[in-house]
Amino acid sequence: MTSNLRLGVNIDHVATIRNARGGDHPDPVRAAILAARAGADGITAHLREDRRHISDNDIARLRDILEIPLNLEMAATDEMVKIALAHKPHAACIVPEKREEKTTEGGLDAVGGHNHLVPFIAAMRDAGIRVSLFVEPDRAQLDAAKTAGAQVVELHTGAYCLAEGEALRDELRKIITAAAHADAIGLECHAGHGLSFDTVGPIAEVPQIVELNIGHFLIGEAIFGGLESTITRMRSLMNNARAQVSGEKTA
Image (spheres, one colour):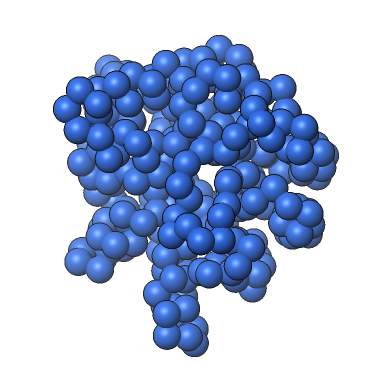
């Protein structure tokens, strides 16, 4: 287990607010810089095929300005791989994408889409980009991600965040089991989607998970408390949860 649990901050919805009115404000690149100052270990941005929030120019500016890693979320398409190869972000996370969805609704089907994914993963890996697949906490999906060539998996935590009572405990057990399996087969394990101050603790305690990617909640909460203080609080909650299972003390 690593005691250092990384936080990736997704800035998509700063761009959503900007695009609602047009113009340049608020600037997602400025949000990324503030996130880094507040303790983010990386920045995630999803360049959707319909460009509903993050734009091509945002990706270019982020790549030029950021001093912490950029994780490009993307669909497995020729267009998106071409963009990834042009900008060479630190990492690329392949996610499922539907034009009509409000947000990513579930994990990628790495089993059914295995042969489709292989050449995209290979092309990005050959360019030095770390490739992640956003998948459900399911053993078959993890095995398929591994054989397709991914180096990383990000476990979809959406069902866990929405569950209550015994269903919540069941979803958490799935994540714990999946994280252990990912580690056992040599995949770096991340997690994200829907995490909040209330739900992050048990996920942060899972020892094989090395990174959490959080966006919508942080941007929404920043309206009330400011972006830097919101990220600082999330960082503290993550650190405290990880310290409980690692036996370390936090300041």
